[in-house]
Image (cartoon, rainbow, N blue to C red; front, side, top):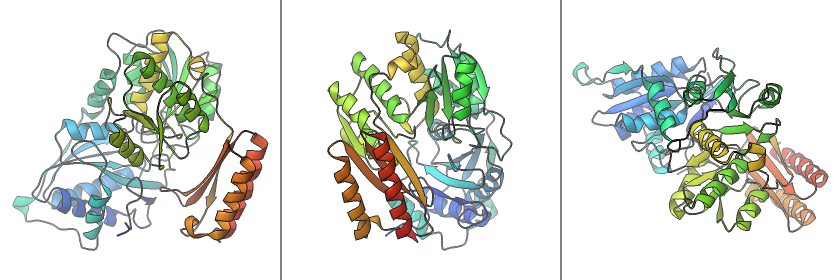
Length: 444
């Protein structure tokens, strides 16, 4: 049965419209409690810095407490931090209130199981089966309790610091940190500072409305200007909930998730600590695949979405995977994508090798790749569209052996993503525009 509310990363939408209403959040908490903590238990709830986070925090708290679960409120904390503290507090369920890289007018709710991993599709379907019912309220003696945890940020900070190689710090590195005015605005600068880096924070003044606004991993322009202007060594940018990472080298050049995967893979390969294949997605740059194969490092592609990267890693015995967008997973460091921990590993490689980030990525050639997001008001069945299949076939024939076309519906936004990759940039741009126009025509 197809899920109605859960997408690739929990429930998400525009605040004030279904499903992102206070009433729905309470019913969702009640449904989740009935499926996952039916006899009472502990639930941790964390959030990013969106204004609506307070409303959803209260609604979820009420739903869980009314259903008999105890609630620990963590406050603003990166998504991977909430996954970690779900384990640390031996909780039955972790809840994140965030729309990740989206604007403040959106919000979302996603869950972690006791191991700090995202729920399976089967469990999400079971939760949805209960959403048609009203939120339950038990009698007084069976209600849960709620408590705010003031040490959440420090606990996660200590976890991040412990991920660094023993005996290695960040002394001598000048780092510009962009927190996207999101969940990592405090823990990021304080973690780097504790390790000895000279930290210049930007995007670390959230007001509830400026999350991801002109800052962070999705809009790194300011970071690209700031790093060379301040003669810094490197720039680090998280997204609103801290599970994605983009970096900027000393010259102001943006380093994406594919390039970061290459840096991490090469370092582990040289240290003989790499296990299994590197897992990317269907959107990963062809240059990453070729660079890894030149070093005899196995590379696999999964569907877009960190849950699919994670599934591929577990199935293959791998430990490192990620997406072009910077959603990186290092299973020997964390159970889920963690932008801050990944950044620390890259900085550790810089410190250990004495190389700048531009030098570390130099061995990977990025093929020209263009992605165009085509807005759509309805679900477009790309697989069944003969017109689109013909358009894609024509594009692939033009690109030849070294070129790729990927069309996919976003799991988090109402858009169709059109990606074209090849040798010649002008050709890639022309084909991408033509395909995007074809998609737009089919979607109307």
